[in-house]
Length: 211
Image (cartoon, rainbow, N blue to C red; front, side, top):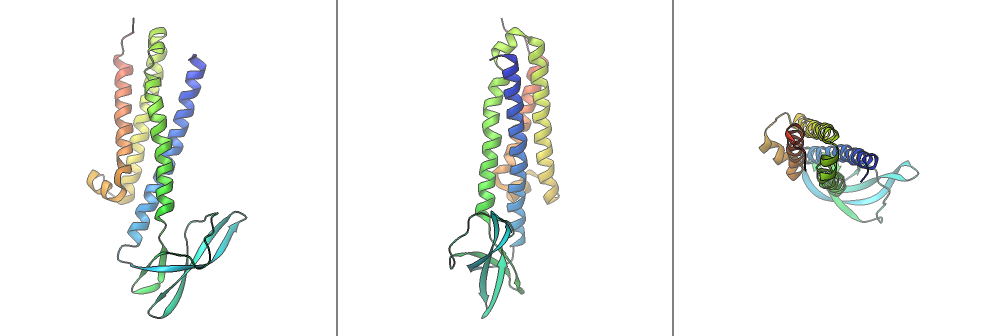
């Protein structure tokens, strides 16, 4: 692969990584906040009754639910372009002390976002690492190799540390155990990225030319 094509591909992969980390942040934090909000709430079934148009292709969904004979209405916090059939049901959580305070449980949307984000992060990493250590680059131009891998390693390190720091700020602790309890396996992504960043930096600093 030529130098220009190689550099362009690395830039594209890092761009995908950044987008993936942003999506992963909003997905994991969104799911955490939702789970935190419904803690202590009572679960019931809500019936889809209508939509609130946001724009031509996005709507918030309205659900009614009954508590102690009283009917209440709640809408989804996020918008969607998929409108379910009238009368279909979904899970609603409400405050037993204030039944009008409720939330439509949107786990599927966050799980989909997290899954999409993991693809944007893990696939580029799987391509990027072998590409950075490509023997042709190391053999032909050791200085280019050192510069390229050092910059890449620093970016990976900063991305991993920043992502973990943002997630930790959300729950006000750096504890890995508590972060895992809040975010699940997504919390291991920054550690994988940090480890790859450190390894890449080490390789750049102590690399020896291939013969």
